[in-house]
Amino acid sequence: MYGGNKYRIYTTTAISFNQTFAEDSYPVKTLHDQSKMLENITITKANPASFSFDVPLTIEKNESIVLALASDLVAKTGDPESNVSTRHNATENGISSQQLKAFDMYVQTGSSTYKVKNCVVTSANFDFKSEGQFTIRLEGQGTKVSRAGNESYTIPGSAISESATRTPLLIYPVVSIDSLNMSSIISVTLQIQNDINYTTFATLQNSLSVTSSSNVQFPSSYTVEKRIVSGEIRQYQTDNNNTQFDDFNTNSNLTIKAVQVGKAANATPFFQISLNPIKYTARLDVAEVYTQSYDYMSLDNTALGTSITQYS
Image (cartoon, rainbow, N blue to C red; front, side):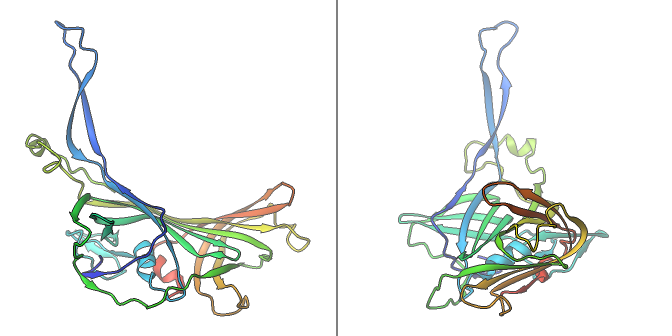
């Protein structure tokens, strides 16, 4: 659920979520009793929850919210659940800062409905494989995992309408980097990585009142330390590109397209992202079939959502 709206997302079976408790140990051995070799522990706080799932993208594009959660930043506010819908910087005490879009994730099983509160996406991985299904893998963190109810629990929020059909999508990648020959592409990867750090939330006063998991201290606010957009482009080595195997550039333009199988390379792509500028280094991979790879990284990640020029 995001911004008061609930979106039904179909994932593969590769879904997981969990949360652990932090343990603080202390010695119990004393000068008068040297036999107590083991240490005792106290538990007063929980670690951030973690989750991951794979989402196959479909022709109907009902999964567009997933891309928005992974790529867009919002103005930082004092309330992590306010979800201010702007991509521009917010000024707080004269300091410009941004946060990731926070959402609540609900997972319904045959007997329970689980809630992961205040989720943010820390990693989004796109795989552009030739004639492969277009899939995005999301990983992230939240503040608390709880059981909201049984399998009949009504998830709050206004339901967003979805298409009556879900059509799997097979794509192939089309890539351009300046004047390089980018034919004979084998695969392309794209990763959006958001490095976050939760601020200190445990206090001595609150820890003294912790008696069980019902009143343990949970994480709350965080800061975005940095954002990295990178990936790899792999191609067969041919007579047309065999001089590019040891190349590098620190100021290039990259466009990656996912074109539906059966359509021409110059057709309107299903998905397109343009990164400008990037840096890349090329390397040769020697095997039975010679290939070469280009490891790239974006040098401007401030407005990543606007770099996705074709999808919605």
